[in-house]
Image 1: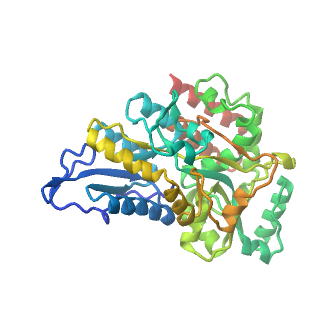
Image 2 (image 1 turned 120 degrees about the vertical axis):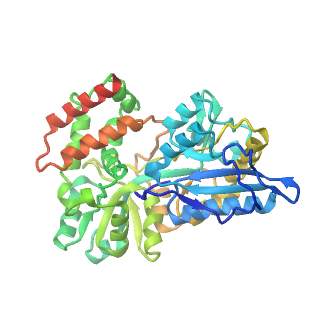
Length: 427
């Protein structure tokens, strides 16, 4: 699913089995002939940089092509920061990948533009996925994508550090601060904040915003973009950001030069205790140190324990491009059916150490069990929430970072600038 700031395109070629010729990845017009029979060739483009998720991608491709020797599936991994731009460019240049994943907002946009195939007829779809999960990929009642993974958001921590200093999992904001104070006194960065990458800063903000704002008003994001509601009059939002800023002293010496990989490495090696992010964090840390004792807990935003929530939501929608090449479309949808199978879901759950949208029954590792076995009062599944689109999110992140980097955070100026910036976009 996510995330490093690599500035290059990586092309996976290990499963390119065709012989000779140059293929047109988007249309299949140049599929290379093999032993007199043309193969159907297409591309799966993704941004899944964690090794376990790449193992799942490669497994799906290898297993499918083993059973379908007349199909060639090329895999391209694009860094998350460049993925959407690259995808739109490829579609515009008639070189679209047949398989890709996009968030809910872009699912609506791509469906409206006619780019997404109807996958309602995929075999066993309704038996493998519950209706709430499937609704995330529906546009006007038509299944345009399927969330093959599920993301949970919380605090991911090195349990060995907690054990060393006799720390228990905090369930209130006051307890959380005491944990941070203890760790700081021991020279350990309590809360790794990789704000060199804006998507990480977003998750720190959203840890508060979802519980304080979105839970009360599911249309919070869209109302901000439409200017129906502003930031200056939103006391819940201002409190969220004020609480966020109050933890600034726990973020390390230079969070705005700290990358996601820096934080993963810090937690994996015991130099950083915790971070706030999504469940993909688990695989990221374990890819650096497979023996790291990683666990998960719900982020306590206040001293009211009923508001300590483990936010769980469907991940991106995996989609099939609506190609005019009927043979290409048929082959891609058949492969997509395998991607949506229980067999695929079970491999994903084991290899990626993550949560899958498909209903599977497999044993998981402790940090995943912390999520699936969570018994807090406010576990909830946010279906089809429309967050800020790319333009608004970039503005939100840029303005927020500008004020977070200042020695003194001026809330009034901050919300006024957000309002002005959003108004400028709306024009």
